[in-house]
Amino acid sequence: MSDTLAAPATHAIEVRHSRFLARAATAASVADALAFLAAHADRGATHNCWAYRIGVDYRSSDDGEPAGTAGRPILAAIDGQALDQVVVVVTRWYGGIKLGAGGLVRAYGGAAAECLRTATRRPLVRLCELELRAGFEDLGAVHASLLAHGAAKVAESFESDGVRMQLSLPADQVEALRSRLRDATRDRVRWERRS
Image (cartoon, rainbow, N blue to C red; front, side):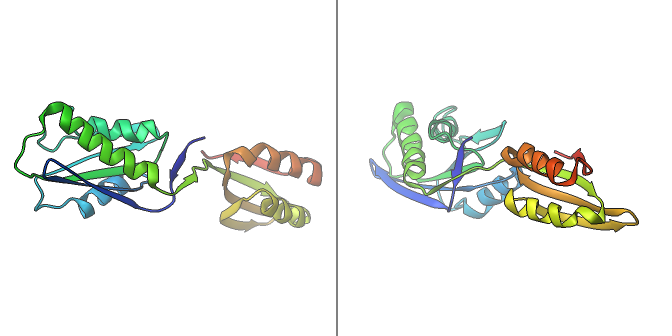
């Protein structure tokens, strides 16, 4: 299990008169990451280089800097901190002195790494969606078990023979919830995994 950010973070540095401002936030989806980038890219700056990692999805952009000198170092900073569901944009205001490829890699990667290193983190809990069917006689046991295992009801519908619930719960609690309900209801609850 990896971590993500608990709150947005920023870090600013100056390298040979160029100012670099790194901004990072959590992004649960690619759409969230792109919305963060759109909101935080400074159009008056020289460059807005960025990267995100959301599970197996990742992208980065050098935004006009030489290829591989900005976006990849920012992504490497995210991966180096073992973070997931994170987006980082590093904005540069050019100070009149060229930094060279190595200097750019160090500046962009360093600003992003320090921003992420000092950011507040939280564990990233992978959620699973399930659907269960239970008879009316088992509702007391079902509700007590859901509460004990951190399951949230996403939807609920009543039918002639009982209830159908769509649940969201931490993936590491699925088997424990099933086992508890199997014992509490004599295996009368029926399951369907949705994700």
